[in-house]
Image 1 (tube, rainbow, N blue to C red):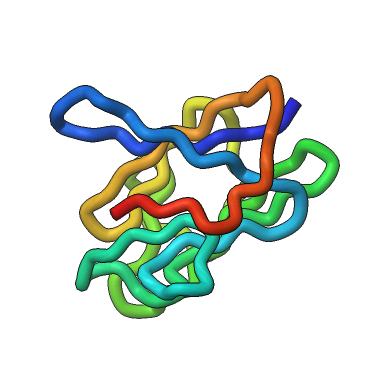
Image 2 (cartoon, rainbow, N blue to C red):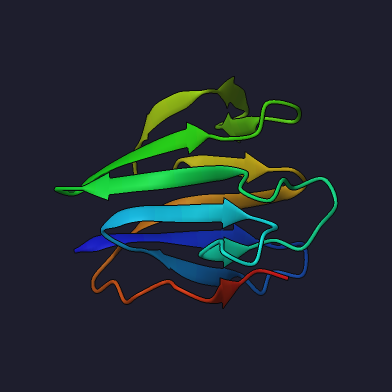
Length: 108
């Protein structure tokens, strides 16, 4: 069992992105595993470190920051149903029965 990020959208059509073992980067840059092509999102904005079913969220953006459940963090442990906000985009963390390689996933 792994984790999945569910992008919460206004139209109710949620999109999901697998969080893979090791490091999953989120941001605007081409090398990010989950890309959010919006100006308020930094090239590498944050990352999730997943090891032994433990997920750690690490902020990489010093200007706009990363929010966990509405609070600004530098680093924090993630739990299922936590909400991560990156610029104007919010994700919910869910348990996933099977996690595939998240490389190349795009949120734009």
